[in-house]
Image (cartoon, rainbow, N blue to C red; front, top):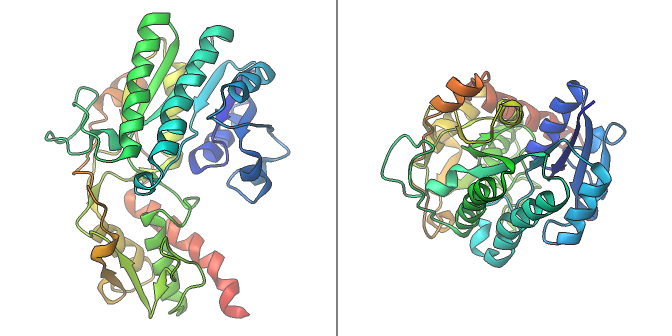
Amino acid sequence: MKTALITGITGQDGSFLAEFLLDRGYKVFGLARRESWMRANNASHLADRITVLFGDMSEGIDIATALQEAKPDEIYNLASQSRPGESWARAPETLMINGMGAIRLFEAVRHAFPKARVYHASSSEMFGGAKTIPQSEETPFHPANPYAAAKVYAHHMVRICRESYGLFISSGILFNHESERRPLHFVTQKIAYGAACAALGITNSLDLNERGQPIVSGGRLALGNLDIARDWGHAIDFVRAMWLMLQHEKPDDFVVGTGKLHTLRDLCRAAYGRVGLNWEDHVVSDPGLVRPLETGQTLADPSKARKILGWEPTISFEEMVGKMVDTQIERLEPQIRR
């Protein structure tokens, strides 16, 4: 039986990955902050099937202790401050977790478990304002926010540790991947939530946005730049790619994405279309929600992952959005019965 340690197990990707590994007979350990685990989270339903270790990615001793307790064959580093927009206000914390936390993990592996295979989550945000479309493993990075800059630092350290110490560390340059488990502070989930509210006749939502105001107010969902275009896939497909990287004979970097581009307008159209509504009747653009420096058009060239790993996405954009909207409707329906 293989043993895996997942950092950030309470997040979207961590919970899907834990399910994926358990289904394949792994013994799964998860590293999480105590306060994150004690409240309801994406992995709560796995409590009796996994072993949770408490610790913080900003503390080297916590990482080293988790490795000693788990003694993992495979390590999946998914822990991060995961909000690019919020990284403007939390730049030092973002660098500490996304950058230095990764380095502390690599160092602990080097000293205690040099034979373990490590997956590190990089991000398409690293491409930022890249001039070339689509982006591959060879595309130069041009980070446009503190989150992306921290990810670039950790990504380069993956290569340095691999080449200098012979560690098996593979990096997944992940393009946007969503699911019904995304928190409400992600714009994709806000849109799914807005569509659910519209379908249920909720004109002023109980859930609040980053300004402390209802996400849906007066029957309208306020968003920033609707022309933002991204390569969106479903998280279930992406965690399968993570696993495939660690089953490959040698460590490497892989771009993971669908190779298809959609705008926020497309996402709104799919979400409100799921409930038979015209999104333009329910969505407004608010200049106050536009980021100071917006990431450019990011589109994956996943040909390397297809050729070497045999990876292909299986869930379409429309199916992904539909799952998100359906889940929000299920969550909100009890509110309108009160």
